[in-house]
Image (cartoon, rainbow, N blue to C red; front, side, top):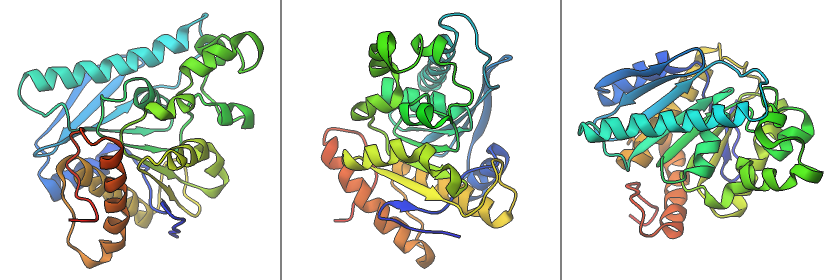
Length: 280
């Protein structure tokens, strides 16, 4: 089921790169797939479209460690993103100003951290059902794999309040520049994403929230997978390449995104966005 609430919509992301890779290859001639780094904690895959490039970053949930272990973990993730982009840019394989990223499950934390702390790194992003180290998820008990002790020093009250203000991604929404597609796979987890969705919406930043009726954490139903994966393909092609699918069934989607494009251009008039606004 798909619902639209302003720029809160219903579609989704879920099964990871195998389907998305297939969709990119068939629809836009994806040229290459790299495994740029791998270890017990880090695995990064890039799929390059003819112009823009999208990154999928996967890894294992962390274990609580030390006094700053999770802070080092997320900083390492962002460093891997940056290194991969710089490497491919130096080789002339991509335009570093047109890179998108997808976060799923725990890697939503990495992606949102990057969007808030390295806002120029990505030109578009998509996240689906994951913790983010934020205040609302902390208060509602949904920061499952976030070790607040090694990320902030403790909870968001008392002596560690300032660390939360400086580090928590949701407290850095004013710095976020990339258009963001959020996928909530089940209504019972909507509050997990609400801080980012409503915060960016109130700031006048391009954001869309996709709500599925009763999806599982790893989507199983073919219809949900199609909506999810193809929706992400369209999202990145719109923001990174300035392309729109001419199919009549997607007219409403692009009307929404063109309005978001106008918002992006108004917020960042000197930016490098290639999307097409509503006034074209």
